[in-house]
Amino acid sequence: MIELTAENLSSACLTDAHFPQLPNFERGKVRDSYDLPDGRRVMVATDRQSAFDQVLAAVPFKGQVLTQTARFWFDHTADICPNHVLDYPDPNVVVAKKLKMLPIEMIVRDYLTGSTDTAIWPMYQRGERVVYGNRLPDGLVKNEKLPGTILTPTTKAEQGGHDAPITPKEIVEQGILTQAQWDELAATSLALFARGREIAAANGLVLVDTKYEFGVDGDGRFVIADEIHTPDSSRYWKVDSYADRMAAGQEPESLDKEFLRLWVVGQCDPYKDPIPEIPAETIITFSGKFIQLFETVTGEKFQAPDLSSPVRDRVEASMRKAFPEYF
Image (cartoon, rainbow, N blue to C red; front, side):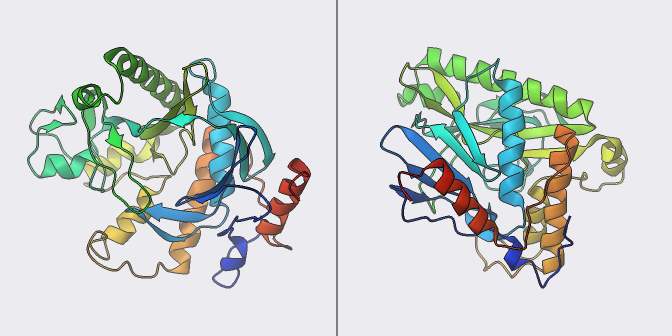
């Protein structure tokens, strides 16, 4: 694989996937998407890295890691819940069924951790003992395993907004879901997490927590969408060093975006202060963690793109081949 340096960092990144030939363009924090008239949704995972409700940097190969990691997990959870995938025309691209997306995110947690406003550790540290309707005992420490797996749903913010905590009771009272729908969605989320935890553990990893986004298809079924168990939507820690690092009062070894979150929090208050430019060496280390996560989870070797031409050119060629009627 090509060695990343400060000099070739920007050329290794896909930061813009807007192709004006395709209709109904929508830019998210990470993905650039298109809604086709026939009901398909084209999603291009860029290398943009978001945290604290903003884009912080571009991380080489990140979009490919997300797409291919999610592909592994979609394949390994299809017996639990249907997913939105129709095709993978490129390592960074998913063609999916367009769904009616639910206005909440399902977050499942096994550990007391986190650094964002909606994470449970900052809440617990402030003295809160009931989080998202779950009662936690006194005396827990950061990164400790919770007494049991919990669900901590949030509302989905509009672009540039902040996700907000919401309880299952509020979800039903506000008419977002019926009680039966909530029960089904909760059971499905816990089953997906249990599968992820099992496979991660077999590969020397702790699946700490994760976020699921669901939609509803034309038959009224819940369908898992967006991504699943990626290093952008989940926390992963290395099993073999967890106990020793906990005993030493150190953060666990992570293979996810918490590495970058902690770097930012060490420099400023990301919700109040300007975030400083992230050094190239930090970005390169971060990219390596994403690749290591993919390889550890899947058992596959990551195939880095040929950087003799921009990643965007390859993606555009894949789009032309997959959607010739638009190009």
